[in-house]
Image (cartoon, rainbow over all chains, first blue to last red; front, side):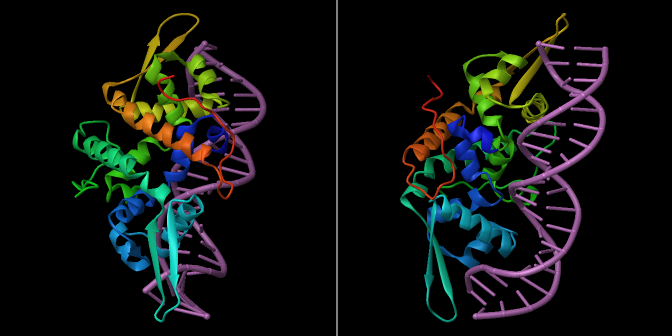
Length: 121
Length: 121
DNA sequence: CGGAATCCATTTGGATACTG
DNA sequence: CAGTATCCAAATGGATTCCG
């Protein structure tokens, strides 16, 4: 969607946040720092390979920080950057909108399932 | 990203809004109803095939309405539904965040280009 | 005018197995 | 523990051409 990015700022936001599990990861990191395996369990049934890539992209985009501790067993912690923190209200809004969307679900039948969770819980 | 959707509401929002040009189209429709060609020009260098698909998906998801006028030459108008209207603040927030992201650009080098446009302009 | 049809390249997410 | 390597399937975006 490179072409769209050069035309409209909203597409930039979507480009940065639009991956599978990305927003869920950010949502978890809003609450507190997580280490990899911990974050993985919190996010859902995501494979390590995929989660790693999402996190690396978020890191590249300046949303999360990756801290490696030279210990054994290895420990890697992920946390939000200042820029990542600016996503808080957006994540909350999207989360609420998504929940409402699922809730009001009387529609054509995309999306189903439920999760009453909210950001500030 | 079907798996993620069943776990977290924010992913639902991303799933609905995450296509190329989708948010840009919604952003245009917030201001007023557009007919196809008009919307196409307003959105950017998008091919009819792609824009049509994006709009159909938004229609399926209850975000936009497609009205066909039995005239010649044919006229098709797109507008936001009530549910689509609830995206206004989110679009505005994403737009502002994206613009700020581009603006503060001291980053690694994804996204470049500019567009000072905002929703309420 | 507003698409639909066809075809194609890339990107994306995922399963599985292995490693420092 | 926190990945990486390899391979794969599906979805996504796009170019081009044609139609009612």
